[in-house]
Figure (cartoon, rainbow, N blue to C red):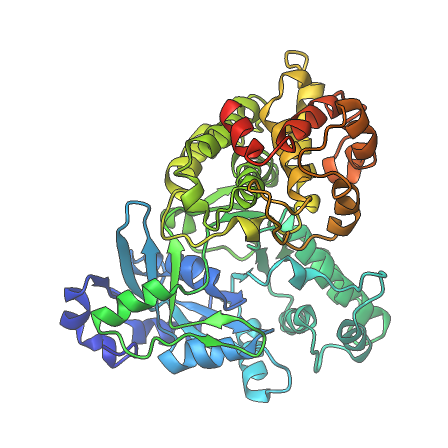
Length: 538
């Protein structure tokens, strides 16, 4: 069984092994896309193939769309060469369900894949032609949050960005520079309307994309590389929109157990490739069954009927509220609690942690008991239903090879939004008492205990990378297991951390939670096994 146009013509072989094949005339869809493209996607990684491409396939199969997606990769060109062109833009999706079953389908909705490289004339010209076409309605993006950043830590533009701004749109080399050049092409061909839709997993993603594109437009206009009307075009929401979105779907790198299962079915040529940029790519993607995409409905040139495939369209405030619900209450705080305590207890899989009654009790308290009373209810997704799915379907999924060590990365940068916002909501609410919080201070104490780099057995472990780890652990590592100092004495040591608003979003001493955090911390350092003992007693 070969993953090629010719190979999938052997429908019996594929379907007898449980694969859903594209139920449409793919050749015609590709032809339609060449003539009148509607959808371009930047960022050819796993999340795109597991989510966006499937949305398009669903619409094509329902007769609601007759074109496919044009995908472009502007960072790691080998992805296109090795995971797309080799397989004639086909890929396999394995949906890994929490009940242990696997749903397999061949995705055929990608009509054309391009390398977004201005040095490759044919590829760049091909994309320019797509952008000159009146039919183009939307560009979606999954280029990671870092992809929108144009600046170095000192605030100056990165070298490639600065060079592109100086040289103009003819041969840019930075990612956003190349995208801005394609938009300039659309502007020059009649100021054609389009929606530029970031679907990266970060707050206010549309704002980040707009700011990056605007910087290029302004620089090029200021440098006389394009007329000032291009800036007006970018700023005219009736012509170019930058909708916000919230996306949520776990798509881990291609898993060996999935590869083995597909090979057993008889699929050939499954070997994953690690690119020069350390991207792990294969002709298949594996993903969880749960998925959410909420998008601000602002499309100047129309859009596909993606609501028929499960996408929620709404206004900007609601998108923001869904994001806040997820990040401050219903998913991310639970993740961090499992990450910190999972590392202390020696776990390496989140799904294994979900078999631990003490840890499940902790995250239930963080989410249902302490989070839900102050959750921002977005209306389009029920917060309790969302947590139910997180705790009962998503986190326990044995197929999801997610590790607490990965989630523990950069925890100092996450505590403010994941716990600090809830603390602030309790302080602001007339009918709630911040001193009633038990689980959240217990997680914060657990993080301090984690930064000591000693697990519950008293053995050293390596903390995940974090920009503040050195600063925080320089303080916490002056404390050892079995330290007999009083709470007041320990508080004096820990106060420089506890007062940091940049870590917790509040000064824990000022809001009256420092004593609770320190009391929990003292219990956690009492002896070996104290983490488990106090977790059980919570």
